[in-house]
Length: 312
Image (cartoon, rainbow, N blue to C red):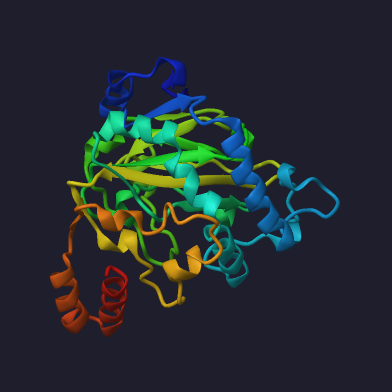
């Protein structure tokens, strides 16, 4: 596996970012986010997972020493409740809006920047192969316009043995690839699509950000340490491009809502911020209303109805 293509945060230009994104499908920016912002977010998350019993008693929560007996992952109920508590943290949502990251993403997508409002937390127990995320394209889960970018942010130093991401260089040029879904909670690409890939990887440190295209194939390395690996995925695009409205809403049957997420936030600054933007939804609200009445199977109708109800 080759080393990542990288650029220092002190030497950023639009060209330095866009060229590797165009040719390789990604760029690693070293030292972009301040340690204070990273530590604050990590501290709040480790408080939540410590209270849930995920960390070894008597250890410093920030060190994230895992309680092996508590190992769990999506879609297990023990994971879902704790994950929701993490998702509800204001700091968890504030980090993708950090001015340094917004500035970089504007260099890539332009001034009409949309930060997708549902970041994803990766809370990865060590030595649990069943929980590892295998090769995939993020577009499979996002829809909308493929010209969208994921930013992967580790909240601590992430050496190779802790399972950072690896990238299949140039894979975004292959277009939208077919994923395997059968008997899988998270769809993934077949070995035949990735076995001969040109993979890049290496350690990623707290403050670094790994930026890649929605069609770039990537996967997590196994976490062989004794610590949980904690990171955040957040997504960005030009808001003039089409957006799947599912990225703005909670489509499942869990009863999640933005009102519940926001209930303990100390500030209103980031609440419903996207509603002031002239977004181009596909499907549109009119199409969602039609799908809520006529889509098959009936469970799909309920899903579309839930999305539509949260857009007003």
